[in-house]
Structures are given as structure tokens and as C-alpha cells.
Length: 234
Image (cartoon, rainbow, N blue to C red):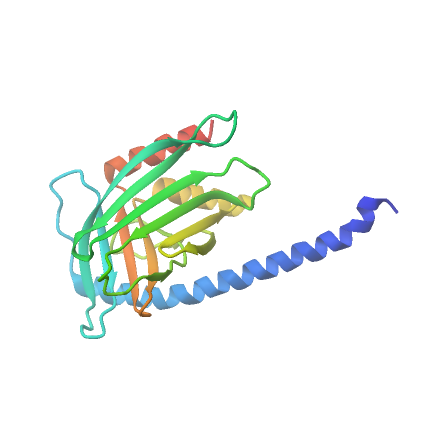
């Protein structure tokens, strides 16, 4: 028996174990999602239709759970989108990324959002999403402990579809989401990222209250995503 044949059972065991861990993590995300979907339906049903925007500024909306108000809170904001070139490594051309700058003035919340294409085929993620929250010292939720994932939406008031991937808290206020590199997941994720005009990020605050940040691409976002994917798919 060759050395490769001898190692095959061990590799299969490792692969199965990895799949089991991923399945458990996905189950946890789905469980959290069901709770957050209920919140979103409650808040969106009571908040009324969004105001019409006269400018090209993409909208951002923060929905918060509020024990003192069964209808919750809706806080309006804005988003700005662009592509950027970032260093990728020694002797390698820069990577193109999509950057979003999101502001919720009433919470003094700023969010830096970035989508990057993974060029290393050995990595388990096809793309990564980096989310960094800048919050004031008197932020009512005290901080953000969890961002279970990203959901793409056809409209602000409609339910989104989850991007397949796993989320991790890297540091206080900083989260990294790796999108699945499995072919079927990758194809579906890319189509959602290209086609859906809104995305949402469910959140758990440090005080255990739930919130959802919904963000519109708008014309600037559509253009940024199109340019980025055109560069990645060359």
C-alpha cells in the first residue's frame, strides 16, 4: 500500500470532522437568525414605509429592540460605496475591494464594511467580509458582541437570503465573515451579492438586545460591486 493510500482514511476522518463542525456552526447561525427574523418582522411592520430620498445617497436603517417600546426603534442613516486597491503581497498586483462607509447619526455609529476576493484557492473562503464598528462611549447597547452573518435583500422591507459562510469576532467591534468556497455556495453567494440591492447585518448588543442594520447599495454601490466583480472574474 502506498503512503498516499495509508493516509486516505485519516484524511477522510479529518474531512468529516471538519464538516461536522461547520454544520454545527451553521445550525447556531440559523437558530440566531430565526430569533432575529422575528425581531425584523416586528420592527419593519411597525415602522411604516421608508421616506423617499431625493438624492443618490444610499440609505442605511438601524432597527433596534426596545423593551420600553413594543414597536422597537428605527434610526435612519446613510452609506457611501467605492472600490479601492489594497496591497496583496510581495510582487503581486493590488487587490480590488469594495468598501462601504455607513453612518447612523442618532447612535453616533460608524461602520466600515469591506468585501475582498480571496485569490488563494487553498483557503476555505471564496470572499471575506470585514465589518468594523466605531461606537461612542455612551452607546446604549454598550457594544456589539455578535454579527451572525450577512443577508442579501430584494428591498428594505422584505426578508433577506443568507450568504453561506461563517462569522467570527476578531476583536471588540471587529468581525470577519468568510464566505463558503464550495462551488454551489460560491455561485449562489456571488449571484446574491451582484443582484440584490440591499443587505442586512443582524447584531447582538453587549446588553443582549437585538438589532438589525439594513443597508442599500444604491447607484454608487451597484457600480462599485459591478467594477469589483468584473476585475475578480478576469
